[in-house]
Length: 84
Image 1 (cartoon, one colour):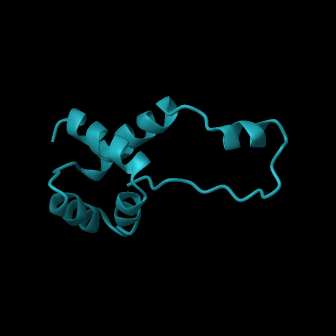
Image 2: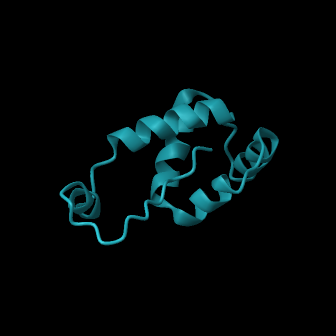
Image 3: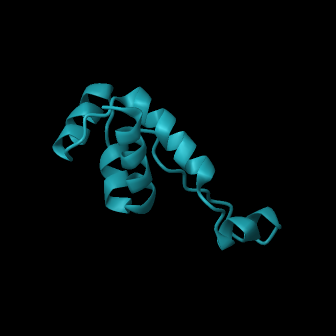
């Protein structure tokens, strides 16, 4: 897969909680490859990780994140997205 395909998958993972869970459930690169292939992609884990990191950095900051940065957080639990 080209990096463009990995970027497409990464962008989709950022907006689809069910897809993010499927990707996050992968314990090994082999499991990741199988899950991604089942979804119709052929991205390798390292391509996806790089594309996902880039997509996260470009994602706009939410109001909740701004509140936390401004000291308005009541619950310090931070949920991170999967890395592959």
